[in-house]
Every structure is written in C-alpha cells, then in structure tokens.
Image (tube, rainbow, N blue to C red; front, side):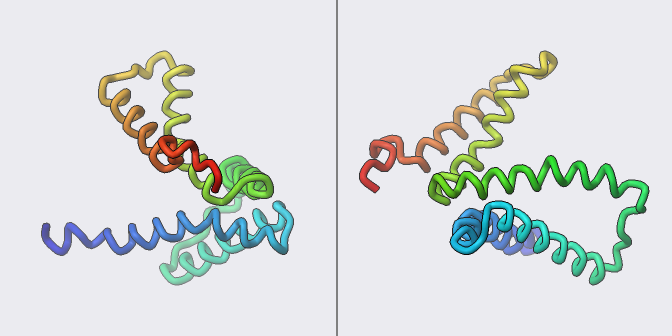
Length: 150
C-alpha cells in the first residue's frame, strides 16, 4: 500500500485512543464532579478545541442566524447523551459504558429496519448486524459467563 494510502492511519489511531479513553476519563471525572459537571467539562473542552481549530485554520464561525438550531442540535446529539453516560457511570463500570456505546450502531440499524419500511434488511445488512453482535458478545465475554467474578 503506498504511503499516501496509509496517511489516515495515525489520525485514525489517535481518534480511536481518544474515543476509547473517554469513558475512563468520565469515570475519573466523576470522582470529583457531578454527572452534570462531567458533561459540562466535555462541552467546554469540545468548544475550546473547535475554537482553536477554527482560529488555526481561519475558518469562520457559522452565522448567528443558525446558532439557535445548532444549539438545539448540540443539546440533543451531544449534551443529553453525555449527561446520560456520566450519570450511568455512577452505577456501572466505564468498560460496560463503552461496550453499550459500541453497540449503538447495532441498535440504530435494528430501529431503522423496524421504523422505516423503505429500509430493507438486505443480506449485507443482516451479515453486518450479525458480525457486530458477535463482536459485542466477544467484548462482553459471553463465553466466560459475562465476566462473573470480576
């Protein structure tokens, strides 16, 4: 594979590490913050990252006319799930929270197939769903009694 074709790999690995560690850092944050504090911290960190990136790339902010819809979208897509995960991690391990989050595409596909009649369960989708489900079972450790005793 040429170097240009592999140029995305380092960025992908960094993203995977950041994404994978987020549940650990939420659990760590919950030692001194409330779930709302953890969610707020994630929002502020994300805002600062986007502002620095925007300034570095000289990207203009969205016009004020779209700030309200963007705020509502951010509330539904980011804030509420982050708050729910932070609250959930007060009751479960960060590893289990990560596994649940990893199962989201599977649940989304199932919901899409059930709700939208125009979406058909093609052999490729069924194979992907089954493969994803097997992956979740492996991560959970279904063959070791769901991690009993750990």
